[in-house]
Image 1 (cartoon, rainbow, N blue to C red):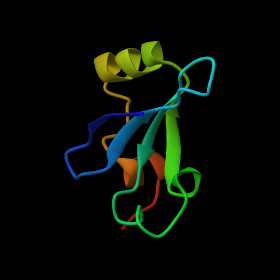
Image 2 (cartoon, one colour):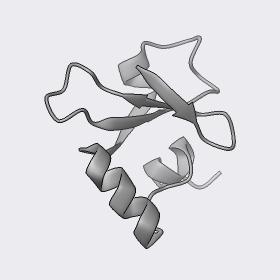
Image 3 (cartoon, one colour):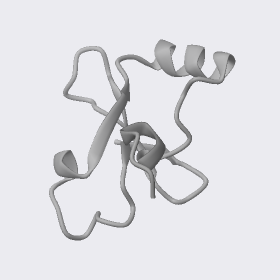
Image 4 (cartoon, helix red, strand yellow):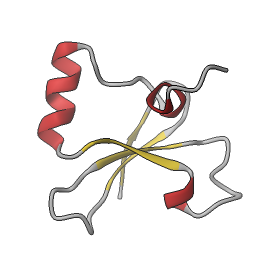
Length: 71
């Protein structure tokens, strides 16, 4: 389920099928070409990890920063 968006337009989603409700960033540049699991990256195992990452400044700001790719 989509719950928001990063500043660059990457969607933020919560995996409702995952018991822990993990959080994912979805690459907005490739959404129409691939299956969601292929253009997403899990950034937190739980919502609590997202809150901690925001408080500590360690949560990536978008999909590409989460992958570690330089562009």
